[in-house]
Structure formats: structure tokens, C-alpha cells
Image (cartoon, rainbow, N blue to C red; front, side):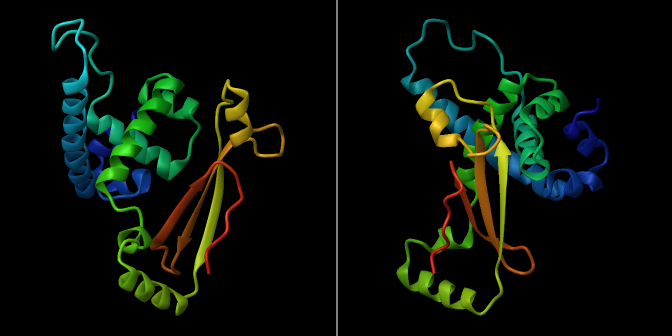
Length: 195
């Protein structure tokens, strides 16, 4: 099975279909994410108590480019982590851990939404709210099944109320032209849009 990253590198014009962004934008995003990854690793290294000499130990299984690609494939296609692991030749647990690591990095380097960009500036926030009142907005919600947590309290947080499934719920609030203005994720479906 061909890795999505190899496919994108061989056929850059398919990048938008597979991961949702142009190949040039993907390369730029990888560069930004790699820099943040190195900074994060340097911070961890400073606090670490070493038992093994620096540079020793097991090497990383995935490059930053593969990690970012895995994250974008998941966000675009929404496969299960089992399928994602098969696509990138890693276990489902490694796929899950890789996704969660890189999505945090992408969250740090990219603004999440227009609302989040202006939430600390009251005047700009009010202007945005007034502007949004002029448009028809679309709310899109989805559920992603997750592996059942081992802890009972964690299971209660993720329980969907149907088919004994544990899910992660998320919603997007978009303009007519699908420009995401607000992205919300939750442990359950109790979501209310503020007027």
C-alpha cells in the first residue's frame, strides 16, 4: 500500500484532494511544524534527567513530514486509527499518539479561527459578531469513534449514549463559502452556539 506522503511527493497535484492543502503550503507547514517540534524537544531536553548519553536510545519512527502528513490525512479523511496506522505502516496506538502530538503543534502555530484571533480584543470581537449577523452560517457536526478508555470516569466523559460507543464530538461553524470561523470540540454532544 502506498503511503499518502509518497503519493503526494510523486503527484503534488493530488495534495489538495488527499490532505486538503496545496503541496507548496504543505511544505511551508512542515517547515513551521518542524521548527516548533525542535523547540519543544529542546525544552524537554533541558528538564530531562539523563540516564543515557545524549543522542542514545531509540530513534523516532516518523519524520516531522510524515507526522504532519498523518495529522492532515486524519483531519481531511477521518479514517479510524487502525486504517491510519496501515496507511503509514505504524500501529494504531502509534498513529493515535502521533496524531495527538502533531495536532497540538499545528494548533500552536496556526490560528484556530477568526473568533479565536479576536477573542482578547473586545472591540474587534464585537465588530466580527456584527459582521457575522449579516451572513447565513452553516453548522457542521460530526462524531469520531474512539477506543474505549480503561478508566471508568474517562469512559463516562466519552460515552455517546448510543450503541455503547465512546466518541469525540466536534462542530464547525462556517460561512456559505466554507470558511471556518469557529471550530469546537467536545467530549459530548452538549453544544450551544452563543447568540
